[in-house]
Length: 294
Image (cartoon, rainbow, N blue to C red; front, side, top):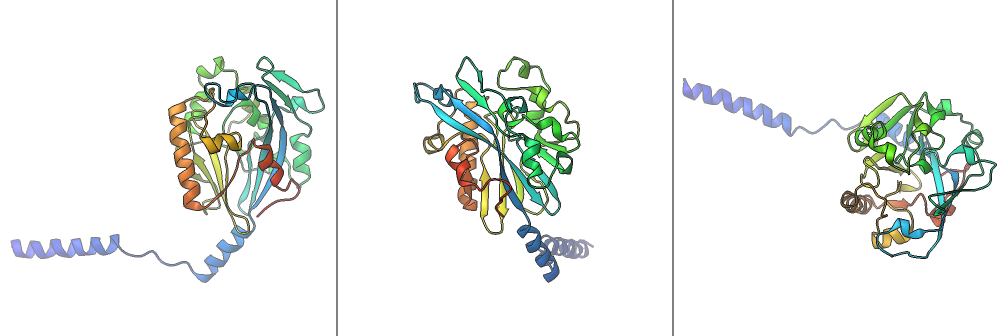
């Protein structure tokens, strides 16, 4: 009896083992062609969300690293057109700045300006806010959420930690947020880490917390331009990246340090080009809407 039971057990284990190591069915030629066509149709548009004159560059460091220095930051935002839908990544500064004199904030440390509205720039590429399936902010600082309410019909992709902070009490005492910018966004999908937006590897939200509780970056795998990583505010300009310098106002500095290591490892693994969203030189390298890269 025991011998018979042993043979049965071995047979079952053999079947399980075969199942565990069974190779997945290869994709058909048709499926591979469809994947290739889909990837070739992914387009990245760079739009202008304003400009930030930084009169106290030392905000973007700890100690006196940049004491007395100034810098002009871009405020880029992006549109991703995909065969399965459209995603807007960040929305720039408040549209209340359009057509007005620059606005000084934080006791003159920052001077904000914005020339072009979001709707005008979208119109140049044949889109309106209602054409977007998804909206995602790299994070919810006010310079990234200015046009958020236009996308009330879109699904908001946000890390659960960022959403908890956005809807909690702590944010009310913070100066870098304007919750009115996204109060109309009700279709919320809370994320727990990385998220493949279109489920094909071409557009992936990457979780890099620290700058804010649920900060994220955006990876794109484009057919001609190759792998690209839009930084969010992992870095603000090239000097920050070269020296791994972390702004004094980050939500969690040790967590930021971990995210920087993970960010750079991912860049190395993917051999990705990094576009630092606030770096004016990086912004100027990108073709501007209605031109695109793919």
